[in-house]
Length: 131
Image (cartoon, rainbow, N blue to C red; front, top):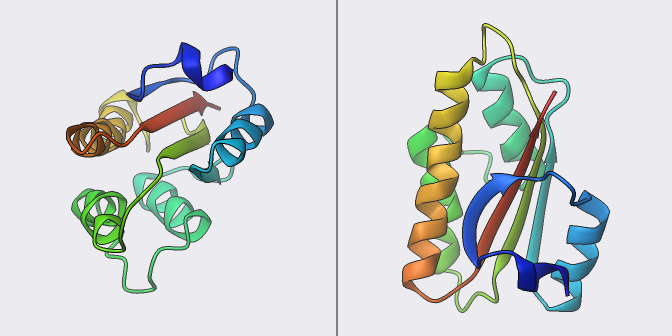
């Protein structure tokens, strides 16, 4: 199985994996599949807006990294038992408005979320790619 080769709480490049395969496998094991295609985003704000829309966050989402973390962890945790998560962030921008530092800050939020769920023994795998 595809997910057996990937640590249960990790953020990594999508590399040889395909989003469609990850979605199929996540659904087959009953895990949440969260997907955001960010090919039109050019800035941190646009990336956060794209993630919020794709993940169906509340309209009150603050569109900053702290509220992103809260949405990925605390709010979901309060919703009850969770089976696990497979997250795909496709086509993160690579430009002066979304440079390496901003990209790492965003990915750190997902790493922190992976740690949060890992402490609760719930798998949280995040895959990403760049434009």
